[in-house]
Image 1 (cartoon, rainbow, N blue to C red):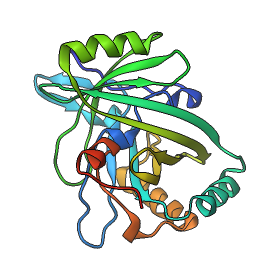
Image 2 (cartoon, rainbow, N blue to C red):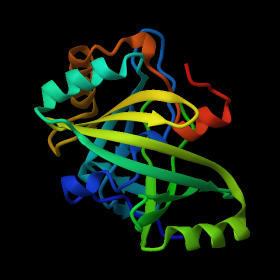
Image 3 (tube, rainbow, N blue to C red):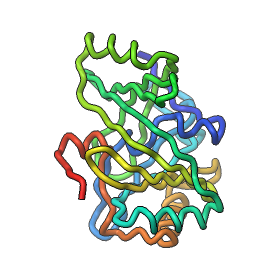
Image 4 (cartoon, rainbow, N blue to C red):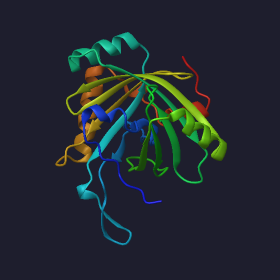
Amino acid sequence: MVLRFLLIQHVELWEELLPFSDRCCCHAPEGRECFAVKSSADTHVQTAGTVNSRAMPSNVEIKAKVSDLTQFAEKAAELSQSEGTIIRQHDTFFNCSQGRLKLRDFMNESGQLIFYERPDTDGPKLSRYSISPTSDPPSLRTVLSDALGVKGEVRKERRLFLIGQTRVHLDTVEGLGNYMELEVVMRPEQTVEDGQQVAEDLMQKLGVSKESLVTGAYMDLLLKGHKET
């Protein structure tokens, strides 16, 4: 399979693309927040096995547990000057010999089949994606379930806020509870360190503590048996 890096073309489409939290896990060194990095543009191959990463826009992302949903929503609404957008998502993960394969159902007769790979290493990491839209998620789910078997499912209600160059997700995940994600959409001239600083500053404004940070995608947390608190 020829993989391509995901190109985010329009802010209204971002939410319909693979949420970054479902793409990678990271383990932060002691005293350092957990950040992850994703590529969001086509790679430019220079020679066999060599990738020119300078042309690849990136996102920096963190995830944290939310103890007070109302308080966090109020702070996010104030900073974004909006009440946010509510989006329902149902992700079905299928057994796959490499990478991850999931079907995202937007619960409105539309969805996406998404294959992605990312290294299971500590620290920032890049993820590669191949995405195909579908207008009939239920039928596609049936076929893939019969062919591959289901690894697990994630159901969530997401409230999306846009604050500057950052997407703020306030998620209520079935079986897990309330979480937030910050996804800093990097500009071409910015470094990963720049994105980390943006995330750190916004964490402080939103009242997100280092102690509340978590690693892993929601599917990972569900498989590990994390419970709502």
